[in-house]
Image 1 (cartoon, rainbow, N blue to C red):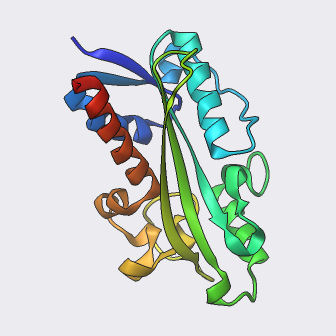
Image 2: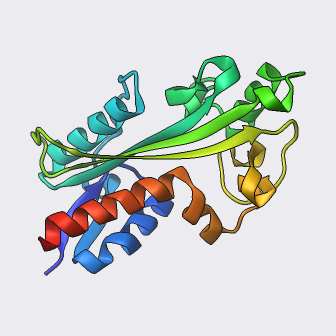
Length: 201
């Protein structure tokens, strides 16, 4: 019989991705909105704190083990902004395009050498709401912010995130290639390796 875990998101893409990865462990991943778990205010000042807040909240309200991630973009020239505010960089109800427009305006006239950036993803697994040692995995993806947008794939800042090794933006990569290279892909593979050790002994 499959164990049920809750994923602290309503994003169906993330649920599907996580389900496929954890299927071999006989774990069924369910989105928190299936349990009427509301979003919790992300009051942390780091990706780690916010991921823990989300996982603990989902676990507490469902009584199930929980997984949460927090991710965003750091641009060196603007002191690591937008960071934890990546999704709401241009305001609470900002669209992806609003956020990109704000970022590009902040980097207007800045040379390619100074446009270095990286995506960060922190993934947290909590066995229960009071888990004192949650599993924390982190993935980083280095790139450069372009001056113009290219590509139709992906979401968020993908159209302006240049991947040097591929000579294209993240939004031009195939889904499969992106998951091999991305910050989230790296954090997920760490989690899978840790779970293999923990669940299979």
